[in-house]
Image (cartoon, rainbow, N blue to C red):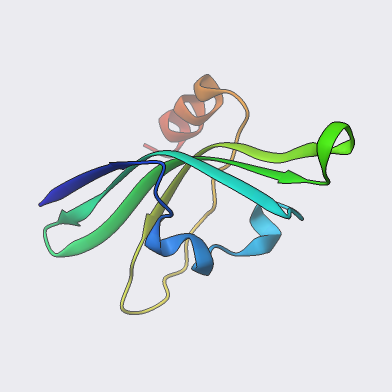
Length: 95
């Protein structure tokens, strides 16, 4: 069960921990993919978060966010990187 929308506000966005992306006062969304995988709800979306107005604005975050809905909190590791190959290298080290 997978759904696609363009430019819509993801349902999970308001639950995004603000300390993970930094301060912002404007947001925009591009592709949003949501659904369930084996009864596990998820959202994957492209977003740009900005702070300030006009020429004085700066990008706080621009990239892809993957949000999972869990019934209980789990001890996990947040992996954030500017380069894709850094994530691949991280997972190679784990497995």
